[in-house]
Length: 609
Image (cartoon, one colour):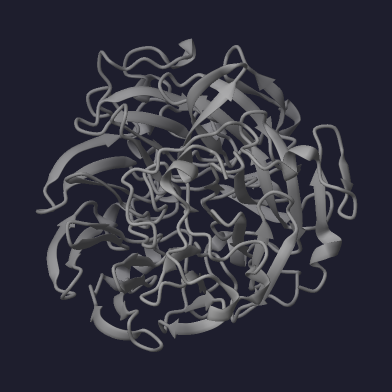
């Protein structure tokens, strides 16, 4: 791990201190820092991984603890699998029983690997053969963010606007449903979420001026059950009498039309290409929408609802319960698609049911997930587009010096269009009460130009160049206290930290970097415990599982790609080549106990170690 120690620093509430100094007391506590609890429904077997986030709450927390802070340094490569594709690998594998399922970026192939065999031999391969025309429509590489599992089926989205279900035992197609039309510029890249008999999916294409939507399909048949749009009339957007946003500026009739210039909502984007969460107690799903189109704000005065918005919807009907726009009249392409982690936290002496959201606008939000009230809003990355946050209105205060004007070059806007954090998912631990995330330290110079709408072509107008923010590093990995809105510790990285995070009951956090390092970190202190250089950059999502030998394994894709990664800063040298490979790590049997290695359920769900 060359150079890592020099980048490590720990933060208190007031100031940063040197890595050699003792960490803050909070960072070494033996109980949850904040009294956090997480509902781990649907409570899949502890040694398996059935969905991209493992649970409805989007926690990416594993209850396994054979691998811990004392032995993680002994990790070694157990086996690898090359899938032969060169696009960005943004997904996570799934593990159901003794089988691992691996999905590739375009052409969206699906492999079943037999974990009972040495090296995990291939059981079957599914080739969906999506239309090659989809590649030219994808703004940000021909990627997929993963597969979901339910009722013996693997369900995922194809780049050419289809959702497909595959029999998990045979690899045969069960159903395929067309959800959108490439002729509009829409594609599909997000990972579905399954709840009961419904699978929730959404579209991509904010840079193409699509109409954003989320839909629910029947898991067994693929039949569409409901669809809610992000712009247009209340009827289209499934907004009715039960819709009660917390803030007055989001109350009114047909705001998906009236907050736009005449007719522009028809190409206003608000696509749903990020993550979906679900609260089984309230039966609400939570998700965010993309930027408004075009990216040139002068062409679309107004709030541009419901783009760059977090929605809460009834899972059965799709009807909206509340909404919150994170960046009103989004002028910098900040979106609101990043994951919403569901936790219960004591805030101001009262336990609140919250969602934690790291927005691309560089504000971290802790929001009451029943009402949409912002409880905490604090910068987690360097920003200058905003000078503060108005807690009464729930709005960031815009810095007028950083508002784009057509044809005028605007230097040093921070963060850039990809934000202080992009889609790469964070992880939350009930043992520490902290959330762990890879974030950015990047700014941009931009010039807006008039953009005209032509179907299936870029509806953009933003010319920009990204560059490092103060400090010079492009990436950082941090621990965040969502109850206080404070960083606990952070590790600076030269390149972008664009992988997902994984945290385990062994108090180990895993993440990867765009230049190919895969690291294990002490969840409480932020000390780097282990690093391994992989064959390509890491933008995938790590998981942990128990193999048939009852040993704990860690798995991660490498395979650089995605427009946000490859265009981060072309002046930097040493960037790795592409190439998709799954790496699986384990510790020698002598180094760990051979029991089940699962933290008792009471401990892993009650915020006690």
